[in-house]
Amino acid sequence: MTCPVPKDQQPLNEYVELKEAFFYRWAKKTRSQYLRVLLLMWLGFTIIFLPVAMSIESPSRHLWQFICVASIGGSVGLILPVLLMLSGWNHVKQRLDSAKIFYEESGWYDGQTWEKPEADLAKDRLLVAYEIKPVVNRLQKTLLGIVGFLILSLGSLKVWG
Image 1 (cartoon, rainbow, N blue to C red):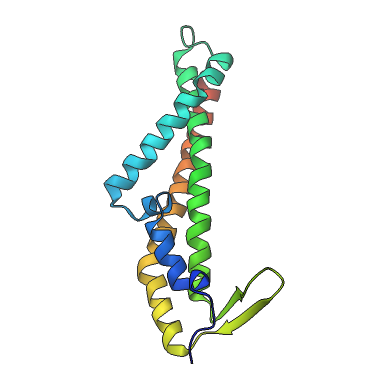
Image 2 (spheres, helix red, strand yellow; image 1 turned 120 degrees about the vertical axis):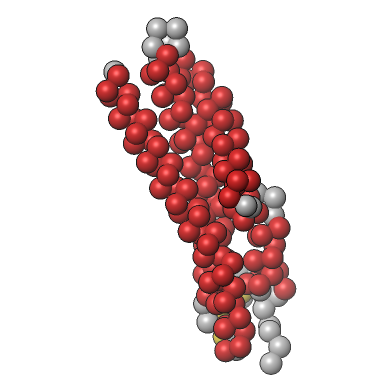
């Protein structure tokens, strides 16, 4: 039986598109490349947040508090792209892991459901286990790390403030 799901809505094609997309492919880079991208994004958000940090703490009088406030702003900004990546990877994971695929033939009003054959489902679940779950786990750990950093930064502000 041929798959009635349009090519752009087939989970495997969604996975290929996601892993090749400029933004989402960062999560699949090597550890050092991934950390470098995160660091650069964090620095970018920190620089954008510097004027706000200056309005909260004076760098000439309270340098440590200024650095903490700027770092907090950079970390809050970094949460958004990581959440977006996690959302995209989780969506594809769910579509590949599911035995039934919802799709639309031509618009929002004509949704259909297709049940995957067992062989396709087994292949998709292997792909999830070996390719997608490690990426999702990496992104979840990244979020936990950012939250931990935020807690430490806020705690150090209370100590010094």
